[in-house]
Image 1 (spheres, rainbow, N blue to C red):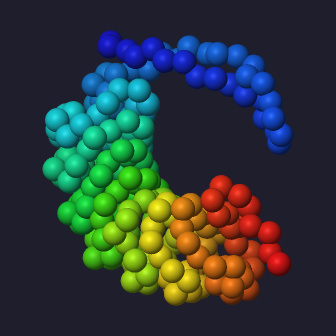
Image 2: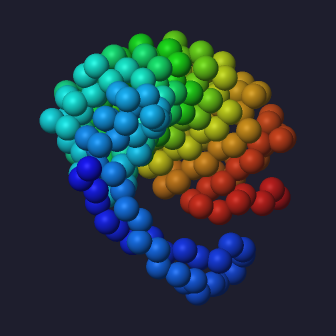
Length: 224
């Protein structure tokens, strides 16, 4: 089976500076090899870190309906490629780094009713596209970046009944958008990166959701 060789640095666990402990060589099976394993019912996960996955590669998903986790760390996927996911009816966890997908993609993903974890950190969809996800009643984790989502998009997120973990990256919302999240009483964790909201709005949100674990720009927020 074709495989990719890459290196991973392991660091000691804990707070404060540490030195690298070891360099471990990891052998990763190719995308095609992993799809073959799913077809043979040996696994339900496809996880690719090094290999670049594009729209042409995703065509190979046709007929491979046993995937529950599709985790692709290096992609150039567009809306055309996302259409190939429409047949993955068992998909629960989707992570596509580098995929600059828009509203058409979210319309496709909204048909995957088993989806629980969705991670699209470099997307380009709008508030209208985000509204498509409201039909995903079991969605627990939503992590995305998009310069085209506004405060109105937060109103759509607030409609997700099972959302427990939310991470927004470079989304141009304001204090008013943050206010829209106060109704998410089941929300356990909120991360905001590269987002300009004020302390007053943050304090108001944490008053409404006192158990919320909140980070901003990769730092835990200390209440005043």
